[in-house]
Length: 141
Image 1 (cartoon, helix red, strand yellow):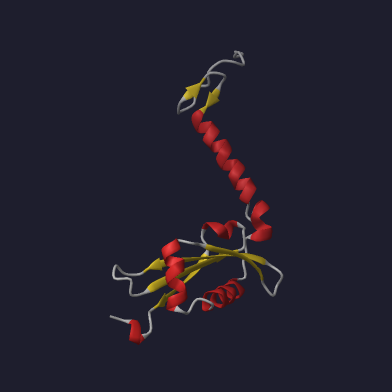
Image 2 (spheres, helix red, strand yellow):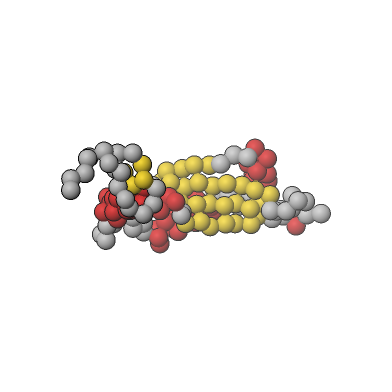
């Protein structure tokens, strides 16, 4: 028996007019994403293997610039976030973000948080490092 093209399909899940099925739609999307990513990385394969040792080195160099408690206090109070783009020795471009926070309620130490990624899929889970900067002994209460 032939069915009309606009007939509803009798598949498990929620059926909608036009023969589309909610579950079959999910299966289609899952197949789409599986092909997009694929076993070899799909379209993200060109940019999913960040050189972690180079990234850690670059981030450490950037965070080393922030060692003076007196210079960090205005950055914390302003809520400023520093964004940089740095090119590594391998030629890869990295995005570096540095944020500044008070680490305690008495404002006795500043936490500097740096994160780095290569702009690819790693941007969702960047590498991070933190520093804890205290004032000099003569300024502590």
